[in-house]
Length: 480
Image (cartoon, rainbow, N blue to C red; front, side, top):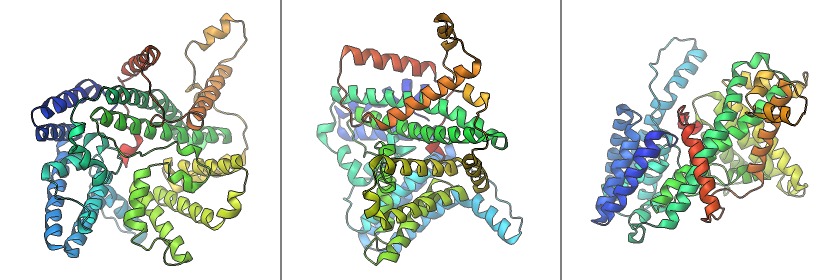
């Protein structure tokens, strides 16, 4: 089930909300049970096989929790971690491994592709963190109900954040959060609708341009590639930002604060700052459970750089089973190492130049993230920097057309061609998107004051979004 669907907005969300607060008035445990049922219903929409896997994973990891807690067994911890990783490898990486074995050894093994379970990367990392924290003595003796709800809590299930137990479970047990908070409801609704608008009206439109470009890669001009590159950079921003807003908004309505997972990353002046703003929960997980156990920066300069590269290669692999993701992670790791080496002189560089260098790198890396293969990405990068053709395809520009613009230009007597109209819409759209990314505060930073004007704006945006839900598109991070 997706946040941007009628079934969620008009059915699951209101039923979950009403049932949760109604049952809390009877007994708080009933409210938690209702929230668990709602979360499992949300996940079951993805299919019975995915649902069965989630239930089995939760039960098995809770058994590991019991064994680790009572025996302080490092062997049980290791077995639990390995089993979680093996499940992730089977569902997400088996086809990739078989393909590479066939390419390397000229074999012809066949692997029957299996559907990627919704959110498996997220709930696998969440449960690994739980097992490790249990071994370290950092978790309390929570009931199975509390644990199962922590893992399956639907606002964070599909795309995170990768929350730790201390972020979520104490809020489930806080009696002060069991009553309806109208400020949280109003703020949560506003944040949710803003996120929905980002996804439907901005990210999906940019995605149409990106999809067109990747369908015609050999025919693209140099300028086409730069436009497609920027469009994808903005698409993944508004897609992920929109999801984070919707997840935070839904959870806020239930009086549960999710960890901040997205904080205006394109405002970053350095690549290090970028990763403090983009997918913050993943960065925190990798730092706590991989970078620090490897030694962090405590074992010398060379070992520090090696650890950084390992962390970012793991980050790349976590995102997908393709060499494009591995190289994407390695590039980010290498750029991090370079920034660490030249940090002092780079800090003295004029801030807009630092931002430009960082933003261009992020754009080029995102193109690799979207490419079907490393060779395709390299072809597009070479062609983009060749600047051989300083024109763009009309089909690409037409994706950005503004409805009724021709009528307006005709009315005021301004001559135009179809291409003029398309290019104007394209430049305007990209400029507005960049402005939103770089200038205002994000939705979680902004104070959302209730007034007649905000109510009109929110209802207007909501109606526009509802009318656009007939063609539901998945979020990009659903694939990871």
